[in-house]
Length: 457
Image (cartoon, rainbow, N blue to C red; front, side):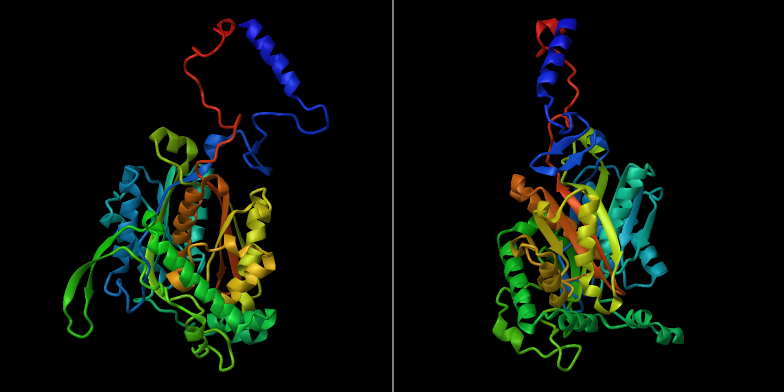
C-alpha cells in the first residue's frame, strides 16, 4: 500500500504546473469547457431541477382554459411533477407559487386547495409570492435558497395566472403624495406606456418591433411542429362552454393556442397603436394575455442521485435589480449581467437566453444593449407568440430552457432566464445543463478495489 501512495505522490508532482498558475486540485477545477467557471468540492450540495412541467398556454377569455378554474390549472402541474418523478408528496418541504393579479389571500387559498387536488397531505405547507412578471422565477429562487439553507430537502416552485378571471387593473385609490415623487408616479404608468417610453428613449422602431413579433411566432410555430414543447407540456383534460349555445364539452388541451404561424410584417404593420396615438406598441408586437400554470421540482444533487432521478438542470444564481419605472422594460439589461457575474461567468459563457417578450420594444432593446447573438435568444419563440400568464412565465421558461439545453447537449452548457418587472425592476437566473460533469470534482466513491494495482490492495 505504501508503494502505491509513493507512486501517486510522484505522479501528482509531475502534474503540478511549474509557473505561478494555481495548483491542480479537486476543490478548484475548471468546469468542463468554460475555463472561467469553477465548481467547489461541495458538488452534492448543488441545487438541481429534476422536473419542470407546464400546462399549455391559452388565450384569456377566448382560449381553451377560459372555463377552467385557476386552482384546477395549478393542481394539474403540481400533480405532474410528483407523479412523473415518483417523489412521495409528503417529502416536499414547501410549495411556493408565483402569482400576480388575484387578491393575495384569495389566491393563496386557491393554491392550497390545488395542492390537495394534486394529492399532497395537509402536512405540506404552501405560500404565494408576488414580484410581478418575475413571480414564477422568484418562486424558483426562493425554493433553491431554502434548500441551500437547510430549511427542507425538497421543494416545488410553481407559477399560476388566470387572466380570464383576473385582469390587469389600475390602483383603485392613489395617494396624492405621488405628485411630489416622479418615480413613484411612474410606477402607475400602464405597462404599454412604459413600452412606448423605451421605444422613444432608445430608438426602437415600429419595424424592429414588428419583426421581433414575426420572429417569435415563426420560431414558436417551428418548435411546436417539431414536437419540442411535448417535453414540457402536460395534457390537461377540462371543460369548455360554447359562448353561443351554452353547451359544455370535455376537451384535452396539449398545445399553446396563441401561436400564429402565418404572422407577417404586412399584417402587423396595419395594426393601430394600442396605448398612444402616434405610438409603436400594438396588440401584435406585445405579449398575449393568457391563462396557464407551471411547476418545478428542486432538491440537492446528492438527494436526486440517491433517488435515482435524472437531473434536468442546476440552479446557479439569481439576481433582482431596480431600474427606472418609466422604462421598466429595460430590466433584463441590468439583471442579466448581475446574475451572470454572481454565477462566476461572463456573458459570452452563456449559450442560451430566455428573455420574456413583455413588449417587443424592450425585448429588442435588451438584446442590443447586451450585444447578444439573436440566434441564442428565445430560440423557440417567446411571450409574443406563446403568451404571458404573468405569474407562470418564470416557471414556464425553466422547462423551455432546460429541455432545449438538454437537446443541444455539450453545445449548450449555461442558460439564462430573465424578465422585466412592473414598477421598474428586472430579474434573471443562471442555470447549468443537468448532465454536465467535471473530472476530479465529480468522482464517485468506489466500493471495490479490484481495479487497483496489487500494491494498493
